[in-house]
Length: 207
Image (cartoon, rainbow, N blue to C red; front, side, top):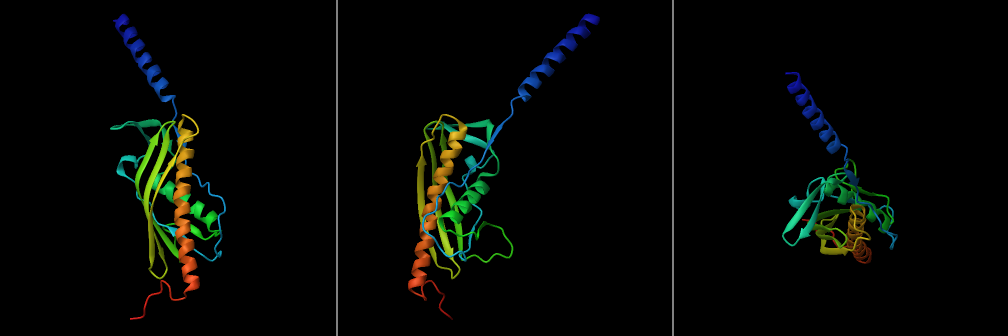
């Protein structure tokens, strides 16, 4: 009887040690950052709000989804985004636009008591990660001015990570998001310039 109990206790101890060993591996968290540099300027009164960004369901999760073959991906439990991917993209774009447009009045929705000059909507079609090879962002976007006129476009940005690790992938994705932001900023500047040269441009006709 004692021998059986001793064996039982030994097995229990080994299981506990094994579980403790598994639990000792902590996940690493990464974030998308704004990396734009000043490029042109608008009046600081120009206010922009970035609507919630939609992303493909396949990558809309905390873990990195890494493509390892043409028809296979791995979900990495120990390398994760620090926030929902759509929220992270929206914040990075807003940060970039603030720099690119030289305006502090750029925010992400929802935000009370904020009357934007422009509203930005982004729908990410593809968000792909290949370790050591490529970070890809493919997104369609719409810029709407306060009068209701719109400009739209599509950005396909590919960035080569400067390393074979997840931090390099996060940096590469941040640079891809910056390219997306640059296209959106260009559309806002073009609309602003058109409105300045033609005071009736984009204005609603009275009923």
